[in-house]
Length: 457
Image (cartoon, rainbow, N blue to C red):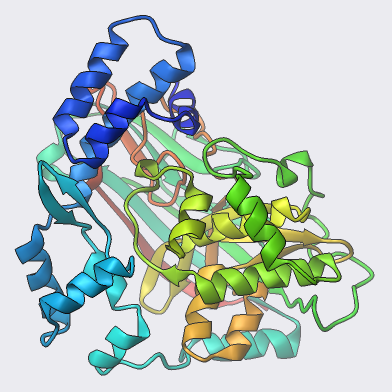
């Protein structure tokens, strides 16, 4: 069964007994029930759902390594005077991600790092949220000049971890800068891929297939230009021409539900109506959605998206999520409100290097496609940086690498396995043809190095 079919089946609910076993932490019992079902006749979509759930159950414990004592010790490394009562209070408030495994409460790998993003814990550590020493001057320059560009050179690599390597035939995909509204002139400078996806591919990658007798990385060096144009759709007149005229007009897919991640559930429909109440224009609706996500949803590290149901609604119900969940919620609510919106993701780049990042685009008549970065905007809001908060409604900084414009887009050539990240392509994917089970977590080493970033005149 194709990986895309398996992942698409996540819109199907689990049978109740399997779901009970799962959230009671009895994963072996859940797997046994799945195997029993799979031995009989099933509708195709339900069979796919059970197959993919078995893989999710394999991955889930890897993301919750800490017992109570270990979790508290991790937290005290960051806040030495914290008490167990405070940890309990954070759990009741929904600020701590945990589950049960075989009767024991286990804590998410990065739960303590998520807590440190809350202002009360930052204050306990003596940390403030100052204006960005590099980003705020860049934003001021974009406003003053009307546009800003960068020429960026990156080197990416991926390989199996040493303890996961076995000689054999490997397939590897590395994200590559796409031709987008804000990106152009992409050049591959080094590397020997067998193929590259088209410049406008939904998820652009370079691809290799090699027989390895010793562990070596697949490496790609490339250069591209990124230029952004300043937009202020709330306070400036609609321009005569779209700011990014080469970007294609929205299609029906930019207003539609889509599989497991953009679903117009009753709760999200009600939330969209509540959030956009009183708005007099699409721009005002989009702003009110952005304001809701950036001020009401707190940034939090989360388990792999592959292990979360109903991604957009998950973020809206828990009022917590990382950059991708916040972007998906923004897209969901915009589409429900009749505003075309879509995904964009890749890397965010600064003086310290490059990191995975996701954001959104939305379309307004006359303006064309604009950007929204809810997680950068939310961080600015909590830091009291009002100008930066407003900037990320309509705008993006040029220090990005966009490789993906569709969430859950297949790789090219299509993979024949469940990916490490079946939804997004930011760090790359790797498989060994002789191994049917996908690589996960620490079995893969990937890296992106910023070689050069220079102003674009």
